Length: 205
Image (cartoon, rainbow, N blue to C red; front, top):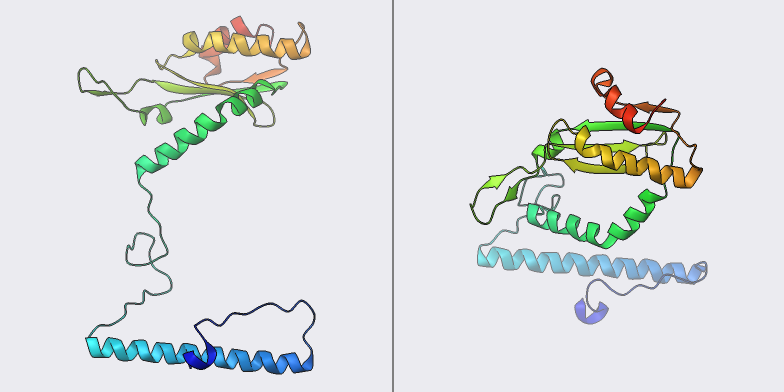
């Protein structure tokens, strides 16, 4: 069969025009020849396996993701993921920074979260100790949910650290909209305890 029909699978070229009746017969004959060649190769492989006492392992079609014997799950190490993330940020940092600087908004939403910061661990080369450098993560988004500023802070009571960044954000927005610009509203967590601090940067909001 291999001498007659060539290697498996036989080369096929999609027709450039609608198939004519005589082409249909040729195509059917080609498909039959391909099926016969495939069957012969599978039969020869089965005979070789039986002669050698080996059995070809075929995984089931749907395995669990953590089954390493199949082909449904690909595992990537944490180091590779970190390298990809760091490389993407290094390549896109200038673009992302410029994009953030061009965003504006009338309704701002600030958020302080602490779970993300707990996952960041650094290594001190002198002491050999691991430590967590940040106490939390802060961000500001506009009414469309676009991130206008974000950053890590060292202490949980973060406003003293983030206040200069909020002031810089307001100065940036005033350059875009004029000196009279002021957000229409600001949504914050723990409003009762943080209202006074925010009013220092955003008065009369």
